[in-house]
Every structure is written in structure tokens, then in C-alpha cells.
Length: 379
Ligand code: ATP
Image 1: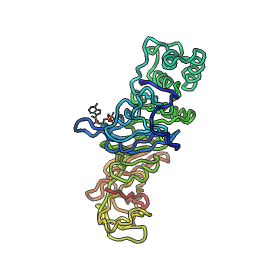
Image 2: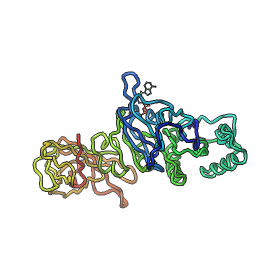
Image 3: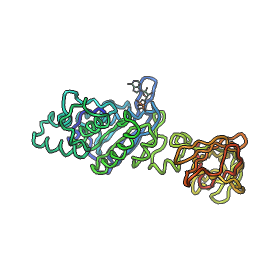
Image 4: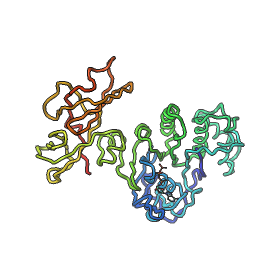
């Protein structure tokens, strides 16, 4: 984890008047090109003060480019960036009220932990008594008080991560930008630090902008997530909203596992439409969504594996017959890989009782796809 410059509480100078609103960061139609590659394509977004906001997406989708532009390490070709209501186009990186924490630690190897954390404050000529007080407080917050006299080479990966974090927050930035900060850690430590980082953000009240390609990390830590693809924001919302109501195929597939179905819309009765899919006619409750579903003709659908209900004797509306082709036991849950005619389906059941449920490979079962579990997609 590497920490870049910081301006602490410096006010970012600009000629544009400061806007009084609750947004920490605003991007307005930001575009960044590298030769033929459009790393960001007209991205607009607003991150609220005190929010834990994640940028999630596959490799190369533009997450780091966006973060670097907010940090002032790169400039957009078009569009505007505002931090705390101030247009920061002419504000250099070291004067922006943000700190950036990267995946590589980049601690000063010859300095002990205390001095690594104190470094930025010394550069800013803060008094030594204030430095001692602030560094000690921050070390207590990230629980490394006992490591003050160690050199980085005497620390574990997780401890180095905490030092880098302490070095970032000791400057009291308005916004902390974190680029895959837990990426170099093993899974167990990563899970532990995810929880701690989330609690820390809540305690400090600093706006966190967190880049990750790990969907579980984004889901568990964030107030809101922007899912990015090819330099654009595909969908932005709270974790539950994105998982339960993805608007498009990309989001449905990127965030968790899903079955994709789809077919011709046959009829509509109030909010419920009948769709002729590859596994049979399914009724879907659209609620207030897609009033033009019948006119569209075709409707793409997704359903999460855990919403699929297996019942050996199942029959009736939205129940199709399928054969169990394989099962994957993973402790808390079992995945069932099913085939309905030519169509593959996945179901996931919690292993809520001791022993395995009486479902075996080769068996034919009823597969119930509840109308309110079927998600209509726009593409
Ligand atoms: P990852 O998860 O792999 O770090 P990312 O989502 O952070 O990916 P970016 O690093 O923002 O993606 O890159 C977005 C696109 O811009 C990619 O196609 C990348 O190759 C390209 N790109 C980024 N920086 C440069 C550069 N300095 N010169 C040329 N192309 C670049």
C-alpha cells in the first residue's frame, strides 16, 4: 500500500465559487482518452460526504483512471471534477484535500513505523508535540500502537497495510481514495481488514472512494457502488439494489451468479406478464417496471440461483421439470447444476439441516422460478 501526497485540510484554490451541497466529489461528463482507448467515456457521478463509495468492475474498465483524475495525478480530456463543491481542474495533486492509498505499501524502509506515519506532518512543519499526539491517536485507531519502533521489514503484510492507512488518515483528508488496498493480502486477513476498514470509515466520517474488482468486498463494505464497464458506469446504487434489481445483463452477471432466460412476451395481466422462455412459459411480476413490455416483444430475464426452489414433486405455474446433472457441496450451501431440455439452470440451497437433502445426481425435479424472483433486464 502506497500513500501519496496530501494537503490535509488545505482549501483548494479556484476561481469558481464553492457550492453548498452534500457532495464530496462530483464528476461531470468526464472523458479520458489514451490514444484510441477511451478509458473514461463521459462519466458523471456524485459521491456524498461521509459515504463509503466503491468503484467495481473488471480489469481495464477505468476504475484507476477515475481515481487518478480525482487525486489530480491525471487530468480529464473533457469534463469537470469538483471536490467539496470546488472545481479542481487547476489544483495540483498535492493541494487537493484527498489522500490516495495504493495496493503497494511503499513505506520508507529506513524509517520506523512512527516516523513513517509522521513524515507528511513533518513536511508540513506541524509542531512536534502535535505530531506526537496525532500519530499516537491514529496508531491506536488502526491498532498498531505496539509497533511504533519497528521498521517495515519487521512487519507482516497486514501490519504494513495498517501503517500505510495510518499514514493516509493522519493528514485528516476530506476524502480517502483507496485503490485495491487489500489486494496483496491473503483471504482471511483481507476479510478481517474489510470489516475493520468499514468500521474505521464509520468512526472517522471521511468519504472513502474504494476501487476493487472483488464483488464480495464491494457488497459488504459499501454504502453505494458504481459498476463500471468499458469506461462507463453501467449502474450505480446500494449493494442490495444492484444485486436484487440489476438493470442490465452485464450487472446481473458481474455481481454474483445468475441464470439468464428470455423470450417472447405473450400477454400481460396487470403487472404480470407471461413470457415464452427456453424452459417454458413463465409469469413475471414487473411491478411498475417496463410498462412497454408487450410492445418490446422480447424480454430478457435473470434469476439468482438462491431464488430457485427445488421440489421433487413440484408442478404448476412457473414450475418446470429438470434433471440434476451435478452437485457442488461447499459447506454452508450446495449448488445444483440442472438441465431443463437444452437449457442449463443453477440452483443454490443452504445446507440448513444436518445431512444432505434427498436430491441426487440424475434425479428429475420440479424447479420453481418464483414470479417475483425473475428480474427483467433492459438488454
Ligand atoms: P485494473 O482493475 O486492471 O487495475 P482499471 O479498471 O483500473 O483496471 P484503468 O487502469 O483505469 O483500468 O485502465 C483503463 C483503460 O485505459 C485500460 O484499457 C488501460 O489499458 C488504459 N490505460 C490506462 N492508463 C493508460 C496509459 N497511461 N496509457 C495508455 N493506456 C492506458
